[in-house]
Amino acid sequence: MSAQIIDGNAIAKSLRQEIAQEVEQWSAQGRRLPGLAVLLVGNDPASEVYVRGKRRDCDEVGFHSIVQHLSANVTQQDLEARIASLNSDPTIDGILVQTPLPAHIDEARIIDSISPEKDVDGFHAYNIGLLALRRPAMRSCTPKGVMLLLEHVGCTFKGQDAAIIGASNHVGRPMGLELLLAGATVTMAHKFTQDIQSKVKHADIVISAVGRPDLVPAQWIKPGAVVIDVGITRGPNNKLLGDVQFEAVKQVASWITPVPGGVGPMTRIALLQNTLQAAKATMGLS
Image 1 (cartoon, rainbow, N blue to C red):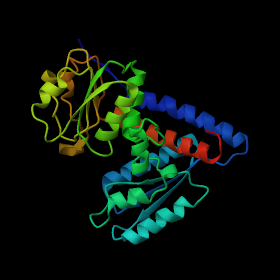
Image 2 (image 1 turned 90 degrees about the vertical axis):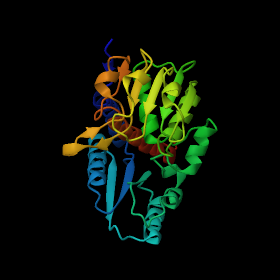
Image 3 (image 1 turned 135 degrees about the horizontal axis):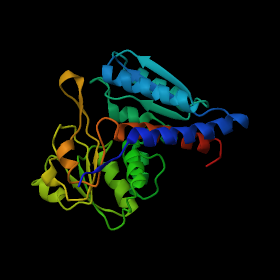
């Protein structure tokens, strides 16, 4: 067996075209364009690359987008004031604060200061709470992107066993809630989990979101499982590395995502979809 590769770039390209067509119809009907504001604090090279990619995505689908690039020395008060201004801006439907933030900034307070209706990252406690209550509104982008990938390869979810490695607030925990909502039985493994292999070995769907290169070997994987690699780390020569031992696991799994080119493009698609969803709600179209 050799797994089929899930091409996130190709799927994302198709979905961007769908969004662009819808926005073009909006414009023809005289509606304003969906608006996304990105706040970038400091000069982290990886963050700058991500923000440029998001800006390109917005340009491609026809969104109105702005980027506010702030000094690494910005105060908590000033950053919250920026967000308050964007919360009240009728041309902005979504607000994204690029992480990581400088150590002196309280990230949780920043997330909580974004209006839940404009929280297109899906990180706000209100939106995570709605997902936990099976009433999803703004869904966290990476888990939402993973669900799009799984749906693309025909996962049925109901009755399936899913194992998630990593329990972060932005990926692992909302990923578990997404899969529960879809009808899967979910096991969460984290840094305190003993014998992770035994927790993962029987899973039909394995999602690793740790950021530790080569964490997941082939012997952890059930033959025919779908393997989604969310982890991403920069290795020697700036090479991007995933959590999964790709070449070995590819011989066991039925489907697998590469790094790069798997989950990353779908996270950005989920951001566009969330911004469009927020714009529709503002205009009374949802």
